[in-house]
Image 1 (cartoon, rainbow, N blue to C red):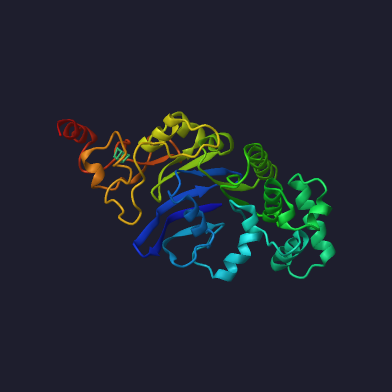
Image 2: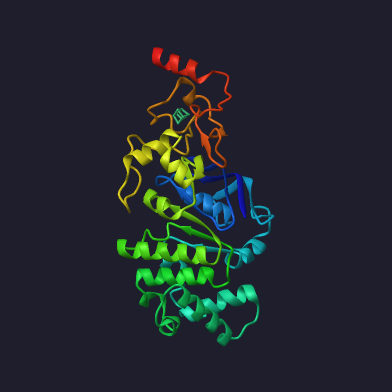
Length: 335
Ligand code: SF4
């Protein structure tokens, strides 16, 4: 359904060019939930915003493709992408109140959204569609909510309204960027269960961006692990979580953050995205780092015998760099 290939996005800042997204590739199949996970600042949201055409200057997409059902989202005019976004691709952002207009009633916002994509429809028609959407996201008393405004909603209710708006036109792909971060713990699970339910029942697909490994384990068919603006491991969630191949994934899973706890308890820090390191971006924190790691960028390679499981690490089998792993290990031990 969606094939993201080598997407690269930079931001210009006073301190220099920020290498926010560096050749990111992953795919989302039909009826699949894919989790994008990593520490804060690892490029998860920038990747999603690049794919959806939501990068604003001083940000710039400098390369790559994002092919959605045969259409490269990065190559089509902004108007065509806007039409796809909302009708074919629904987006749920982190802060629901940032997505809702404070001076329009919920009904008016549904109306504007629907007529922007479906043409002239009466208020009665769009209200009926909105009512159905609000019922499908578990809002009791949807009439009252439709006639209300964003400031009258609780955080959980506002996110349900946003999900209703994101799904009212029946998109085939839903993109949820940390959709529960702004909500309290009890509401978080309800919202995630709701998203999963909507996607599974309608046989749709979803990209779920999160920093919570527990959420990935529970809700995602496949996982994309990002580090310093790159995908360092991607594969079926069950296999990757059972036998993580990349030292970063191993460290994340080894640290076992409690549910809702942000990743970021590994020793050391993510490298600067301005002075981007020349080799493996994880080499300053990696307990297995070899001599070549700080110099040579590891290519993404399939884990032997596994379909759709790829890892970027010199230690993974199939590495075709000139030095063998054994030579590296010997050199590392000697030095
Ligand atoms: Fe560690 Fe080297 Fe693999 Fe990077 S390439 S994760 S530094 S072993």
